[in-house]
Structures are given as structure tokens and as C-alpha cells.
Length: 422
Image (cartoon, rainbow, N blue to C red; front, top):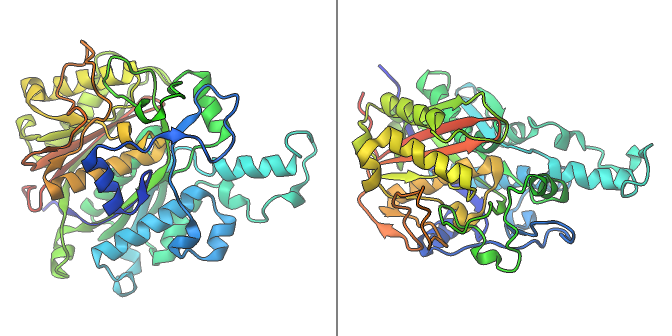
């Protein structure tokens, strides 16, 4: 018998306010958290706007050693994981540690701390023979992406399968998907799963400036992120984290846990085509959607909402519109599809997990979050993108899709509690 996988806890650190309640309030009201960059001086950059988190690690009670020696994205994950575990009511101290795992994603890892310390050891790039004594003695924690999952595993005593997933902008979806399969296949009973990234730094912003992927609407940051709108001109960088507690369904029931929903299916495929380019047909994303539906034993017409990747670049918006129409057929035109990146920006590897958290909350509240700033339709994007205002709707099955540099295309399907057949 296939093991079922429940979501029992949610934790979020996102632009607009830390915590799940603040996150959902922003989405439900259709507010945007995009603004001019304050984390560093962005003068000289093409895109000088971002969706930043107002985050002080000391306010969240993190250990001083963790604050002083880890990158911002690790701190985001520690706080989000703490909220998720508390929300789940799980006492990790009483669990078999060999049956508790961690699966966390990140696209750029410790870039912020690495860049900061390189400036120190090189005297702002003036020295080739750098002075290591100026660096943090634990700089290796920023150098190694495995730090993300290792820190969270240590905090909660998880000795089961522990992994850091890095598949570009699908890292969050893939980390949740791998956790789903880890439980489904019997290798763990509980997995702390999600993703975190803090990419708002000079080097990361410069990377996306170079390929003109980010919006240059510096004079109007609040309205710069406008997925599917015909005026769109790139995404707005974001940051943050989201972590879920996933449990084997009967394990959750045995301890009388609150079950938000189930993970019904997950799939990921590559396009073997181009590092940043996408084909117009959406074949790989459609295949991921079809596979996730097959795993959940659901017909395409059962999908009630699609949480889009919706980055706000023309090729991506058209690519996934084509993919959803290919998979859902005529039902695509009756299915609301929105992008929360219009409100919280694009936090690279973290956004997939943040979007899955949004889907869980949409199921809880029976509300579809909107696409903020959507006003002028693109003739090539002709679905229902839920313009500007959240929409009450009966939701049972929700699909979240993502697209990442490298040609990665992923889909996660969530169903209401008890919705997945055996």
C-alpha cells in the first residue's frame, strides 16, 4: 500500500512580515512588498529594487553563534523551521531520530556572506593575495551549501535522510517533492522540508542585470512585478524561506495532529535545451504536471487552482501558460491561475517552497491569492490570472508549478485532507 504524506506544520519568513500569519495577510490583501534596495547601496545597478525581509535574527531568539557565523538564508530557514515544528505540535525529542529527515533547497546558498567576507579579505578587491585573517573563522559554513540542511537537522535532532537540494528556481518545489517521496517510499516518517535564499547582494543582482532578467522599473517598485501583464519587463528579486513539516499520514493521525492537506504528487523534468531559455510549447512542464496528476490518481478537470511560477518574464509566462493548457485542456480556461511573485518577488530557490506554503494556506482559507499589478492582458497569455484581488473559491486540489535555470520544470500537487485515494 502506498504511504500517504500529510502537511502538519507551516513556517514562513517572507517580505512583508515574518511568520505565516503576516505572509497570508499580505497575500489575501493583494499587497506588494517590493521596494528600493536597502540592504546595500545599489547605485550603478540596472535593477535597484527588491522584495526584502524585515528580519532581525536576535528578535527570533536564534543562538548568538548561529547569528554570527551563518549566512542570512540559514537564519531564515532556522526561524521558519522553528515555526513549522511548533505549528505541527511535533515533539522531535520523542521521535525516533533515524526516522526524521530534512530536505531543504537553495539556489545560491551563502553568496551574501561569501561576498561580504571577500570584500574584507581583499580590501575591497584591491588585494590579489588576500588576508584570510580578516574573514570569519567559520567562513566554510557559507562556502558549503550543505550547511543549510545540516543546521536545521542539528537543531531538531534529525538523523534520517538529510539533504540540500540546489536546482535553481525549482529548488523549493524539488526539496518538498523529494521529502514527499522519502516518506512515501518508507525511508522516513517525518521530514522537515522547504527552502531558503537571501540573494539580494551586489553580485547576484549584477548577474541578473547582465541578462536583463530583472525589472528596471526603479521609480515604481510597488508595481514593478507584474506577471502575465503585457507591460511586464522582468522579475523583481526577493528573499525568504518557507518550511513545512511533512508526515506519514497514519503517523500524523496517531498523534492527533492537525492535517492541513496531503501532498498528492510530484514530478520534475529537464528540457536539455538551454541554461536560461525555454521552448514555447511547455512540453517539460506539462509532463511534470501530468506525472503529478497520475501519482495522485486525479483527472486534470479536478484541479481547482494553479499557483504559477509567474516570474514576469515574457518567455516564462508564455511557456507555462502553454504547459497548463496542454495538461488541463479546456479546463485550463475555467481554472484560476495566479502568481504570488507579484507581491513577494522572486526569491530564487526559496520561492517554490514559499509558493507551496501559499497553496497550503489557500486550501485552509478556501481563497485564491491574486496576481497583483495585473491590468493589461497579453494576447498570448489568455487564462484567468486572478487580477489584483483575492478570490474566495471552493478548493480541493491545488497545483504549484516552477521553472528554473538549467531547464528544470517541476510540479507539486496538493489535495485537501484525506483527498488522496489509496
